[in-house]
Image 1 (spheres, rainbow, N blue to C red):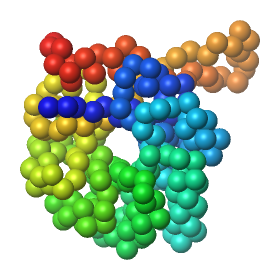
Image 2 (spheres, rainbow, N blue to C red; image 1 turned 180 degrees about the horizontal axis):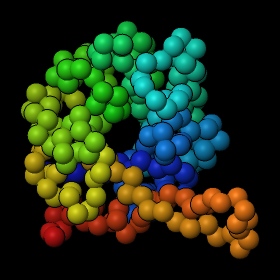
Image 3 (cartoon, one colour; image 1 turned 45 degrees about the horizontal axis):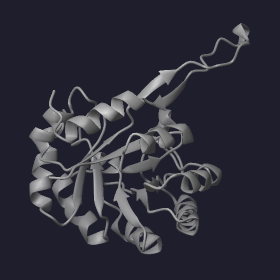
Length: 243
């Protein structure tokens, strides 16, 4: 069985690390503290020029919930068109209705606009009311993949639901566990879910290289970057490298 690893990258440096160590795909995001929002056109363009692995920017105009108004929807359409123009392999989307169902009508329009790019439905799925109905709706929309933590904060907590979703989906759509995926639980997660694709940021906090720090600002200028060794270890374990 061939496994794939997607790295959620919040900066260009992390995307390049992901490529360097053999990851299969980058989900490019801005704003880690909001769980990921649409990255700038500048970073998408630069990432596309420097990456030969798959590049999927997230299309999410803001943090918070996944109920978007008409203006935000127009922004999402514009950003998807830009990603297509820049040669991205796919995008990552997700929209809900107020009752926790999938916003099928508008998501379908985004999938149609994105074609021939692939489309992943992100963890808005973990906020839907009925995951099994939502799965069928997302398949109908035409998405190729669902990123989910099994409706729990971490994928290892939601492993049972993820396994049930994979069995329901059969080969119609990829179910990709994400959130809290690390080298110390990847084998357990693989066994419990039966998944073939996995998602992680594998991030670590790196201190600023600034020699001068204005102490009166009372701020931490550290940045999250992907951990090269952590990604390498996850890939080794997925390839059957053992504990």
